Image (cartoon, rainbow, N blue to C red; front, side):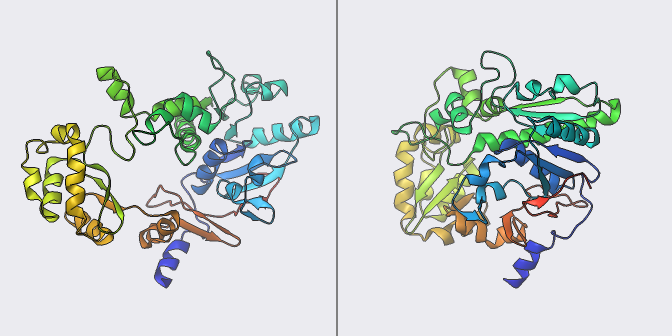
Amino acid sequence: MEQQEDSMEKTIAPAAGALQGIRVLDLSRILGGPLCGQILGDHGADVLKVEPPAGDDTRAWGPPFQDGVASYYHGLNRNKRIQFLDLASTEGREKVLALMAQADVLIENFKIGTMEKWGIGYEQLRERFPSLVWCRVSGFGADGPLGAWPGYDAAIQAMTGLMSVNGERDGGPLRVGLPVVDMVTGMNAVIGVMLALHERQRSGQGQLVDAALYDSGISLLHPHAANWFMDGRQPQRSGNAHPNIAPYDVLQTGSIPVFFAVGNDRQFRLLCEHIGCAALAQDERFATAGQRSIHRDALKPLLEEALAAFEGDALATELMGIGVPAAPVQPVDAALEHPHTLHRQLRVRMPGYQGVGAPVKLSRTPATYRHAPLTPGDSFE
């Protein structure tokens, strides 16, 4: 365990990240914008987060709390320094304009029209700050039939079809159990910022990066959208099963549920041989991927009958060893404490803080963790 702890800690020391020298003014709150700012900060950007006098709403999204601030906030705001400004006041706007003049990137997710009301919107300021990359995270974008509407993750999941395909086949629509739309929007915002910074090297000009939750929700519909484009059939809920592939589902073993992701005929043959039912791979109902998908309802009980003789954890390890994707269904604590999680430096510890580490690994300029959440600051370093 000591060796694993060392692996978990070793990227915390200050180092030059890929975005060293990039200054980010993070005016956002809640999730999508703050996640974008945290990712940029993890990779070396100098991020200054400006919060209203009452603080980011997520400070109250608990329990649990640490010193009165919720875990939700802590999970999205490391590698930033924070200060409090009231942008509705003349003094607050003057200070934020001074910070904009120093920044390379601005992130904001105010309701469309709010910054314009204050006289500090993108169109009002783009000539004053021509090189600034302005990242706007919003619910639906600024125009169109739903333009300027406020957006919330669960509502977007409902509107974009994600809930309609999530859940058990005989159950009702179900929200994905984490804020997937908000998080993907934050990641798409990072992609947009990086594209704009790259283009700025040629033109010297900034531009508006428009990252909308609605767009991200629609973008997540694969393969359901691709299926619908091709055959026009309404996608349905399939529980843990895949709409196109079988067996690609949670199956019960003799001990625990295990997820099997059998994507081709070779993997299916290896699975059947390993669990003692090789004849299934020769059955014309199951011999090809297409036939297995069609006859999935007949296949699942036959596989579970054979799997009842196996202990799930050991079986999953054995199958992965021979090239058959399989994994035990683990709770969150087991996933976060897994030796491979520690080896991949996906646990971060700083004084008074623990969090999930950066998922993108760069060989020369890795992510670093320099500022715990709530580190004060009033200017760029």
